[in-house]
Structure formats: structure tokens, C-alpha cells
Length: 261
Ligand code: KIV
Image 1 (cartoon, rainbow, N blue to C red):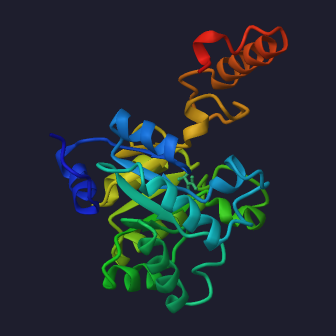
Image 2 (cartoon, protein in one colour; image 1 turned 30 degrees about the horizontal axis):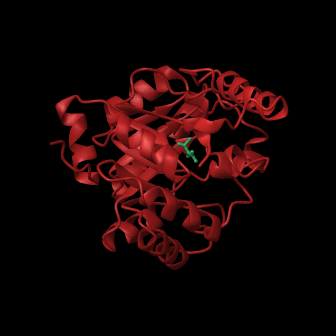
């Protein structure tokens, strides 16, 4: 029987040369499918904001919204490690605020916390409090307005800044780190430099693991992201199924005796 994934086990996968497979989930059915597929890590990302709540970015996402989705994912996640994302504004004011927000998401069912950017004091304080922390550098979507859009980070002279942030995150005590939208060559260099696993999204093939947004993988987003791959055309398949339902109700083909009591 497969063993429960934990933060220390994720960290140890790097030494063993095992790829860490991660996916986002925001609700019970997605977490259930991810769990059945055997992923190592389920992230309740603040991407819930733009992916399922219809916001333009992750900036409006609140702690209440994150708590709600963490609880839903918790109910279906058994063997995978459940990582909960701290939303914008929940850790920026002070280390105390960061620890308080992290504790709140752990109480909803998180088994580790992710936060964006180089916040070594917050990471160290959470680690001290017994909370495993996943870092996140490169294109950190909560800073979309500072970056002036969703664009690749760490090109040219910017590479040193991203490398330094990744090192700071590791030194503060993180057990893993997401590298988002950075050149593959820089991701490879960070992966080589760090002892903790790097989890790439739009960061090339040399990371220790990969993370993708659930809806991108199943073809339920607009398909415009270069870093994503749809393994099924969900929009088409679900759209066809719903159209058949609409047609069958209108032409009295559903329900039949078989669906009746
Ligand atoms: O919120 C999120 O889904 C994320 C991943 C894309 C890494 O941060």
C-alpha cells in the first residue's frame, strides 16, 4: 500500500532522483481525481481566484475563500500532501501575521503552506512553529501589478535576483520551492544549486518536479499558456455532453423509464 506523502518525504525525493508530481485542486472532485491518479502533492493554489472564481488575478483572493477551498480539498486528499497557498495580503504586513494566517490554513486541513516571494523571516517563523513551507519565486502572480503583467522573470541580469531569492527561501527553512515562468537554463542552475526540490511551472524540464493547474491539464482553460499542456479537450467533451442533455430534454428523449421510479 502506498505511503502517505509528507513534507520530509517530498524533500527526500530529490536525493533519490524521484520527480515530484504536483497539481492544483480547488474542490472535492478535482482532489479525488488527483489522488486517484497518484500525484504526490495537491496544492490549493490561490489561482482558485482566476481559475474558478472568475477574478482577473489572484490579488482579490481572501483567507475566507482559501479556507473554504482547503476544507473541500481536505475531504478527498488522503495520500497526497495537501499544500495550502497564502493569499495576497495575508503575510506581507508582519511575521506575526504570516504565522497567524499559516496556522489558520493548517487548521482547515493544510499539511504545508506555500507563499510567494522572498520572505525569509516569515518562512523561518512558520518553520519554527512546525509548519512545513514551500517557497515560490520567479513569476509570482500576486505581484502581477509590480511586474506589469504575466511575464517570464529572470532573463539576463535578472537571473541573479531570482537565484538569490531561491537561496534565501531555502536558507530560511523551506522544504521545496516553486519556480514559475523562468528560463529553463536558470531553473536548471537553481536546481543544481539548491538541496531542496525545485517544482517547475514554465521552468523547463530540469526541475526536480512539476506543478500544473488542474484546469489547464484537462482542457478547461483557454489554452493560451505556453507552459501548459492539455491532456484532454475538456471544453469540447463537456460542451458536447451538455449539448446532448439540452437536446434530449427538449425532444423528450431524457428522462426515459430507465431514469424514472
Ligand atoms: O496558485 C497556484 O496555483 C500556484 C501554482 C501555479 C504554483 O501558485
